[in-house]
Length: 175
Length: 326
Image (tube, rainbow over all chains, first blue to last red; front, side, top):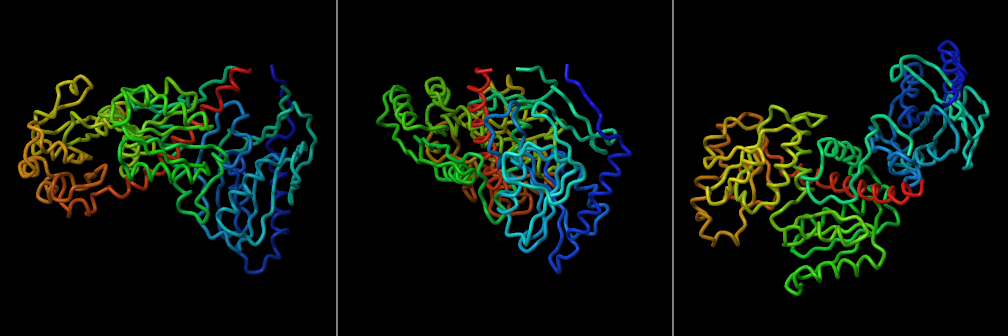
């Protein structure tokens, strides 16, 4: 049986999101006339992106589905489902904050970057994550991070966010 | 494999006909196609999903549209595409079909897209090669990607995300007996709950379709008011000489979709045609180009559907060896 350890309850998650909002708002303040887009990586990054977008003044929101850009399509067990990518704004010249819940290997972020770049040439892309759990396999670092907490390779970090889940929480699952 | 609850997995390494697919399979293709639609509208119209894979178009029958659509679909997935046009006349009863396919496969091919004049040719191929096979039309049997794109278009135009067609009525009009498009449509539509009416001259309307759950009618005028979508099959000119087929004039008179007939149908009825259309024969120009027509939307959707099918069969194929190792 997998062992589950709670790391953050709803109140702690709210604090972490507050921190992330502050960091992002400060980090994109100096962007001049470049429009700001907050873009979530499906499937859990999009929920977090929506929560950030509620509280940060922005011009656009979007979603990227990275299935078609993964480098591990044949290695992962259950087949990933292709979902829609929704980039309804001009990417050229935009300042994009890419949002994901957990950062580990960096491969999702790489795929998301490639997806974005196929839509145009952003002025800059910044990365916001709720949890950096370590374990990078690519040279990718977050610009904004609320919680840094190293996890062992066999541990799975799960972020639960409303409204997709019934309550906000972060848990460590040991397989 | 660990037991996972209720996770759907696409199981098909080949797509040979809609008869083999379940309602869940059909919905999975549609959901996947939705993800591919946007690829055609952005600045880089390509995703790397099939990078380094080889797709072969193996066509034993002339085709421009379907072949181009598969070509473009494979290109947009970053696959390399080989066009292999073969002649059926040089073929000796199936032996050479398999030989040809094996030869091509030996060059290191991942997916074969095949069109052949003989019903069952695609299945025969699938049984003899190791790579994935997609049927692009086999004789009078099935043309699954056409069926998929037709149904996808209906779902899209009716605003039905789940493609649950319960309570919807679709008429298919023309030479039902010889139509692989009709067969694929019927299998798919029935699985998603639609009521299907086959309409055509009695000589081209075999009773067997009743056993497939269809209503048969020899009068187009009788069904006009009831249908939500009407799929006008193309009249094959080579059949016009057949005694089973009425003259062109008589056909248009009885089964042609005219402006006058359209007026008697539901306001938002979908007028479909697999193309290429014979203007003034099975469909009047004003109807084909009118607001009810989905003809060009069908072509556009064909691309997303074929991308989805190529992607899924490849996914199933690459999952297989990995699963056996575990």
